[in-house]
Picture 1 (cartoon, rainbow, N blue to C red):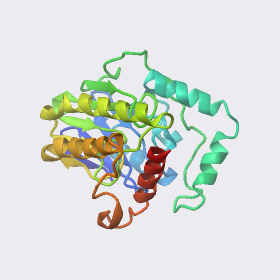
Picture 2: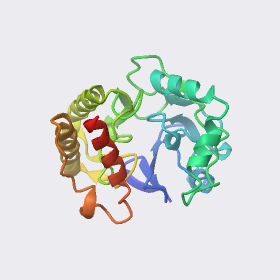
Picture 3: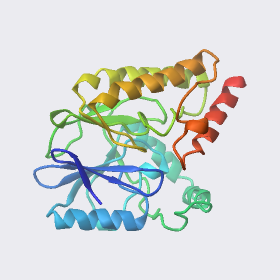
Picture 4: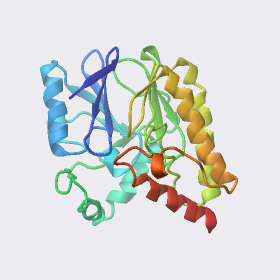
Length: 269
């Protein structure tokens, strides 16, 4: 079900790890950002939009993780965008004939096994490097590209609505997930991204993370501070004290501690 979080901005929360899909209403249709997880959910989004008299005129994926680059035929054939680096990553991934099978296999132990359509996975067009806004006929959506978490990751800022779509950052349930590769580089990239987001924080009324709860203006800086404290602790060789892991983690999200422990093992190497 779509829920309005600001004028002309609606959110659908997936049953799978609170994944958020964002709908932005424009003059001729909607911009669909990170469009759902299961086939049933994407069909439901398409049906909800049809009831509103809206169609999808553009899509955008904030980053190239499989759960952010899905699509369904019921959503139509609108152009689907990502940053140039995001699209390049997906092209490389899809050049491997076994990639989709590995994603499907990774979901076998989850509650959504067999329910995720992968036929249209990752078919996104890369916007030219340095593109500042999504090209569409609607409210200006600023692209804040950085390299935290995944190649070509982008937060999106709908300035006239005061909404920041943060991708896989600024979550109230997930700790910062650092990109693969050199840990020191990943840490600095994450801190750089947080500074970029902090640059617009004073104008944000609503923050929508890729996974977790939608936050109000009072949450924006608090989430930046919490993510920064976690990453700085790693940089300083310390074990971060974070309420999103351990006994204080939100019920059902205890697995986030596995991500946390994996990053501590990288730190120890």
